[in-house]
Length: 173
Image (cartoon, rainbow, N blue to C red; front, side, top):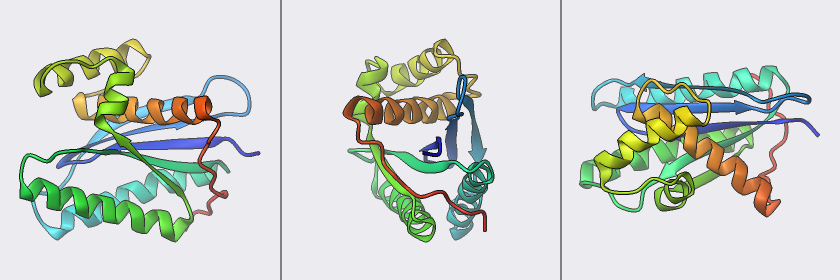
């Protein structure tokens, strides 16, 4: 069975991403960061898709199976946020279908509670960076920290429930 690469996203104009690349022996490799995407335009979603595919192609070059996980918010601060989230989700869904990948939504109340985040939105932003750093990540901001915690939550959830999303090895395009 090939190892799994977990790729997590905290979508937005500044989209956080995180990667946990399991290895046959030893500790998994981990990296995270934030992409600053173009202002509100169709270009934002195509750039997000291009960058997501780069992460997937990198995982494929190592022969790993890939699981995509993303924050699925319960509420949006407005109709425009909801529309942008729908566009990001649609792009991830399209990529998952193209590549036959597993797609795992992470509800903010589930992964946030698992990580021990409490309080209002600003307090959670500050806490997520501290928590991710405490777990060995080096996030550049709260978006990367959120993506790292989403990725860890998905991996831990899969191990606990023994329901690891299965996807075949992907081939680089």
